[in-house]
Amino acid sequence: MILMAESISHIAPPSDALAAVLSRLGPVTLDEMESVKLMNRIDSKYLTDVRILLRILDDAAAQGYRALCADETKLIAYDSVYFDTPDLKMYTDHRNRKLVRQKVRTRCYLGSGLTFLEIKRKNNHGRTKKKRIRIPSEELVDFRSNQEAAAYLAGHSAYTVDRISPELHTCFSRITLVNPEMTERLTIDTNLHFENIRFGTKADLPDAVIIELKQDGRKASRMKPILRRHRVKPFRISKYCVAVTLTDPAARRGRFKLKIKKIGMVIGHRLKYAFNNQTF
Image (cartoon, rainbow, N blue to C red):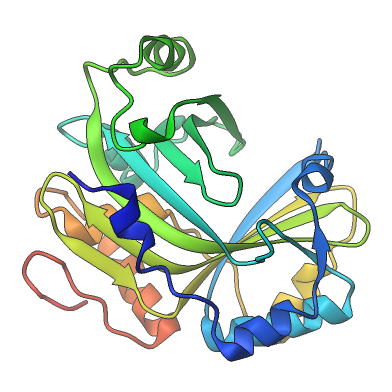
């Protein structure tokens, strides 16, 4: 079983170039960030590499974006464990493009030290809603003996603790930006590392940067022109599904094989299965 301390230990500190550009972004507190209410929200995901990220952040600083700062750092570590059924129903629903689907995970927000059980539900209109309950940090890898959390899962999802088990451990570093008008939030994930709990296989996405833009649909976006300027295009991506594709020999990959190949093209690295060293 994976321990949280083991995964976080290899989250790299920011490079000198990244640290320099992050210093140009003013700080925003968690309380300020939580006040950004995006009632008519539009979410978009993008994929790029670290080289382009530096240019994006430089332009964002010039536009007045601020970065979430916790414990005097703007590059914050996240540690997550995803749960699934023995036949990987949650992964399969996503692979098969099922409109109504769910994900169940635990997540430790290292900036605040808080750990939650989180349930993400996507409806047939493409909207995602997240419900969560706080759990002790020692239950990150397995919360199923927590009766309150088990009841919460049963009440807010289609799953119960007897149907699921820990499937995948992920860790990454995140930069979170907000625009001056407080009408956009941007999460930027780097240093992505995965470990399959069932098989003990490991994979990562070297130099990959996953960006998610959450904006008020009634307001013009400052970030979209920046992304277009640097030729960063929308790219639908699920960290969980990518990680399962790379690390679980029992998973049916289907269309995700092409997705992995496209990721490799964007970041300039041919990605490998963790279990047979075959490249995409």
